[in-house]
Image (cartoon, rainbow, N blue to C red; front, side, top):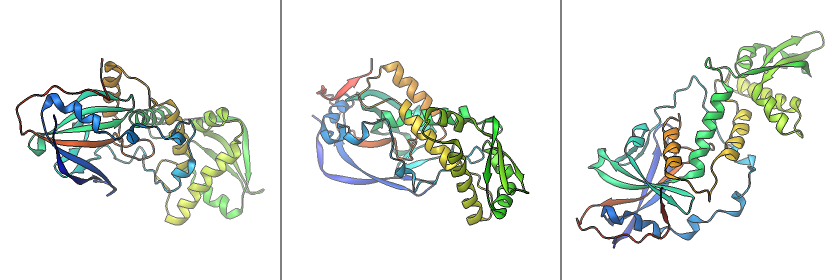
Length: 317
């Protein structure tokens, strides 16, 4: 039997780049390798239940209202590192984990040995939907952005004309370099105070085609408005991933990602983690939430191996 100490320690998972802190609990136990799987029976049933409101393919866009997205090609986020005292999550982390299996076809369990913390082993739980959502998001971004950092653009057969004020027209024309980088080609009709858009991001073409209730001029206006607000508030052009694009891609990534309840075989899990290790931000889902949690830290106090009682865990085949 794996014996649990009476106390539960609150541990902090901290993003070293953003100072965002997530708190979770770690149960400290006596450790034997063969009995690791037995600890999964201790997971509260509430953790394994899928909230009713999450069983939809749609997303409440309000969750993005306070999100600041910075995933521009020119911004370095590859060296992202999470710390939990002696445990450090960086890209080297993926070389040091051993997959155990799935729990309730919702989470993927793995063993991680921290070389920087006296070879202490940890049980790590990954949210399989969040893992694949991150992979899908970065794949979608790569498909929409050229190697030079510009979004792929589609020429319009009939340019779209927007009536704007003289001041707005002047600001938008001064932003033409930024707008070109995010997929727009624009010119000005100063006589009639009109902004003429002749090319738009291919991303927006696909989005409007799939959502026919949405009008292209409204989407363009939304993007332009956000860019202008940033310029006016900061006195410079934005260099970040456009907010509207991020919402669109997050929604699509969520739809494409592996769902809770979906069984995965060993080769599928291995492929999933290989893809995750190649992501620029491998420890966050598309919406910025952590994709993993440290379930337990174990201390080897006995050499005796006890046969585990497998209840909720399914070994990868």
